Amino acid sequence: MASTIRVRAIANGDTTEVQALIQHPMDSGFVKDAQGQTIPPHFIQQLTFEYGGKAVFIADWGPAVSKDPYVKFAFKGAKKGDDLKVSWVDNKGQSDAVTAKIQ
Amino acid sequence: MSFSIEQFSATRRLVLQGAGTVVLMSLGNLVAPPALAAANDKYPEEAFKQKADKDAIQALYGRTAEASDKVKLDAPEIAENGAVVPIAVTTTLENVTSISFLVSGNPSALAASYAIPSGTLPSVSNRLKMQQTSNVTAIVEAGGKLYSATKEVKVTVGGCGG
Image 1 (spheres, rainbow over the protein chains, first blue to last red):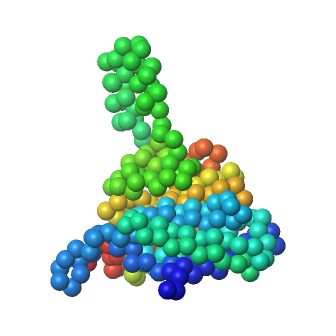
Image 2 (cartoon, rainbow over the protein chains, first blue to last red):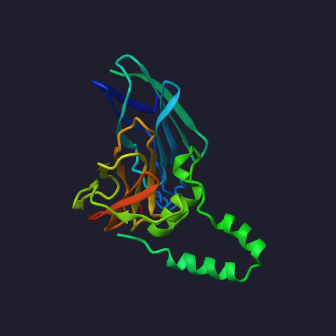
C-alpha cells in the first residue's frame, strides 16, 4: 500500500525545510453522514519527525486540524542525503511511518 | 490578550486556609503547575478536551499567556472554507520550546500543539478547521514564559458541523 505520508525535506545551507502532507480523514466527531449518522472521531493525535535518532518536531493534533493535514517547519543541522523519519499515530491506534531522504 | 488566573488563585487560597500547616505544604505541592505537557512526548489529552481558550492553555501549560508583538500570526481575514484555514506563526523570540494554536469558536479550543526542540526554527504553518467566525490565537512558549498573538478570522462556511 502506498504510504499515507508525503514528505519533502530540502536542505538549504544549514537549514532544512520540511513540508508534509498526510492522507487522513481527520473526522472530528461532529459531522453526520448522508444517513444522518454521526461519524465517530478519527484523527491523528501525534506526528513525529526524527533526524539522527532525535525528535526535531512533534505535532500534537486535535480533531480541529483539517482533513489530509499539511504542516511545514524547518530545522538546522541536517545535510543533503540524510534520513528524516516521519511517523504518526491516531486516536484509533492506527499508525504509519516513512523515512525520507533530505534533498 | 491576557487571561486572568485570579479565579483559580482564589479557590486555591480558600482551600489552603482551611487546611493545617502540614497539609498546607503538601497541598502546595499538589497545586503547583503541572509539568509542561508540551515539553514531553505525551499526548495532552486533557488540554484538547477543554472548551475555552483559557482552560486549554491552563491545562496544557499550567500558566497564562501575555500578548506579544514578537509573535507574528499569519491568518486570512476571511476564510471562505472553514474546513481548511491556512494558519502560520513565526516569532523572533528566542529559546522557543513549543507553539500552539487555539480557535475559540470551535467545540474544543485547542487545535494543535507543536514541540520545538532546540535546533528547530520557531515557525510553523498548518491548516485548521473553523466552525464559525472567531478569534485564532497562537501561543509561543519561550524561556518558560507564554506569549500570544490573536487575530479574528471570518468564516463564511463552517468546517466542523455537518
